[in-house]
Length: 252
Image 1 (tube, helix red, strand yellow):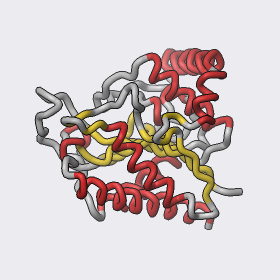
Image 2 (tube, rainbow, N blue to C red):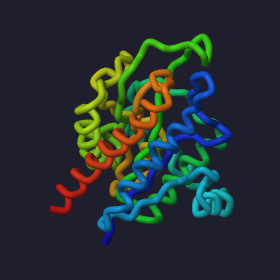
Image 3 (cartoon, rainbow, N blue to C red):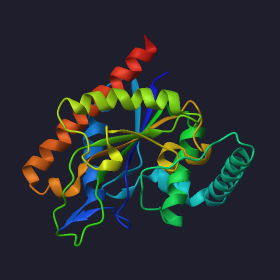
Image 4 (tube, helix red, strand yellow):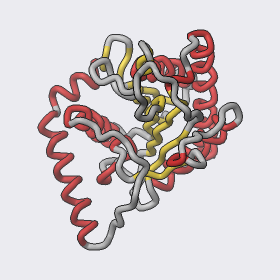
């Protein structure tokens, strides 16, 4: 059986995430994800999926979101109720997480929908691809932070152990070329998180579904087009190596 990898280029054409000048994060995420997809799909041991392409969400995911809205809403409600019960019983301890902008209801529905799809399709790993930012005076203002960070599920989450091993493998490869984030809340570059839907918040990912979210760098550091394109290629190669190293070790 091939190893199933789901690539999630963060955001989309409607909610594009960070912005620096005319450079939009959603476009950057897709460019890097496409590079990674093209590398991974060459390996016959892997079955690679991607949630969107240049035309928008792929037909599989567009159809899934449209036809499973009620199911996804029920999935969210049930999962949240179970988590609240765990908290009330003392079986899950809420911890302080790195601050993030809360996803809108529509965006959250899609992210939870991806988790549900991954569970149903026995996905082995979800790789969420992002570029970072923080509040600045203007989208034209260059910020002060730099470096990458890899987010992974917090220890209490059912998919934490295997996800953390995958995250560490990717982190070690990226660290060969890039510095870790200089943002205080991302110190060390490997960050556990309970609240990110992408990582399976409210236990919406099965223990068998690994998930990591990679912030490859701060958007305002990639203004130059030629160096940006080279970065996509290098980052994709290093990420692919981390993924392969992890799964080859598991298989052997």
